[in-house]
Length: 639
Image 1 (tube, rainbow, N blue to C red):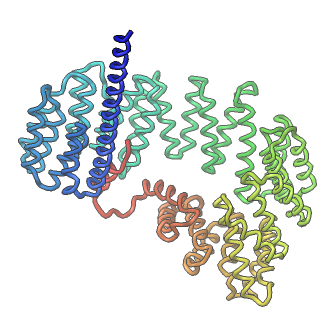
Image 2: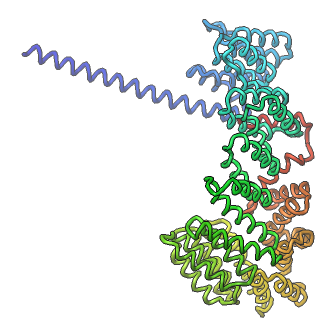
Image 3: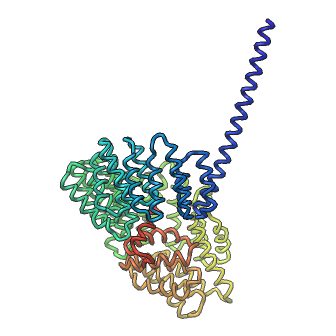
């Protein structure tokens, strides 16, 4: 018994000692990992800042601790940048001697050291030696090729993949070869590799599309775009059974916003497969977002023509009416006969589809058309009341219907009923964005009615709205009231301007323009001058008089750029040139001006996106040659 006691005691002591040692080792390992992370982070920071003198010793230390080859390559590059070629060569030869099995990427690094000293023949021999030493497995070929890519040796990376393809028949290296061809600007062979991937399996389509999208961002002289269509069409003719080619061509047309061509190809493909309804519906939606209303309607009508029993019929029916409404209202809605025909489409559509949660947007659009374009407020309100009777509506859904009803009462010059309904919507939508949007409408109504101090107080609260657009609109109207109410001994100019705004909201553009003309004549030097010009521009846009609108906006940009409406006017002017006057290059320059003159504007992000798109078609005046721009683009691109 005593023996057993001492044995257990000794075992407990051993376990405690073992736990202590393990804990110490764990603590030491954690401390070492933390130290490595700190040093590696500092080393990379110095490296990225091109402070190679500080980066080199840290990179060497981190490499020796981790044996991570990335740190070693950065270390060698630091030595090359410092012209310490002898040390770089010595370090590489030392590492190569340690290797029981040759690692080709180290020979690549050594070749780069030679090349940096203009020892080009030795460099080429070393590069070839690297390729010859690659073991027969996919990973080794990828590692070696990546080393070449890292040094900008794109041709040698291509040669590495080609040798891999010859050595390993089961490995095609299509994707990798396509990338190296891109870097070499060999678009023909790049496209061949991507098309070969699609021939192999259509499941590669998304990856090919993503890669081509990146390639097109680097396509500074349209070399790729010029031949894309031709190469894909040749493949379609030569191998018609490969559906992936057709889908790629449709995708390309959509990237180029050539919706007519995309739809034509989609319909042709659908006649072969009978399975393109979803793609055609998406195409219609994309055309609609890009204000290509005719193409959107063609897409939806094609789906409708396939019959009521098809799964996309109801969706296409509703979207087609919506597209017609957007086209009509965006074109000013001046044609009464077209408006009445559209009202009939709405009536028939809601009769077929029924009024329910899925058609509430159509209900609101129909009511808006009836009131604001056909002057039938009574019927508009009846339509909205039917929508409100839909069971179990969410607060926001009901709120949108009520908001439209309140807007119609504003149109009908019944501001008190409108004010009451706006208040009901606000009360029921305190926890969503609709609440703030309607608060803005209510404040604007107070402004229309001449209650300027009350309206300004509401607007000042809305400046803190989580919706950037609501906050911006509130700030602009608050400043308009504040700047013009405090300066005048009379509120007459602001009252006239508010009345013009009300008439504009009511879609009574002629009356609004008459009031604005009278205001400008009575008060030619008033601080409202730029606001008058901006409102006139909006009215001319509604009337599709884009050239006249551009003149008004250009006056603001030239004479009132410092004022509150400077960025609004500049952005709207760019939009007019881009979408209505057919002067895209002029629009590009205006979007660029937005970025430099108004970097904090709510329109900055949209301007940046549109500027980038237009720059692909109309490149900036280049500060360097195209080759230099292409290489810089490669360095900035992510693959």
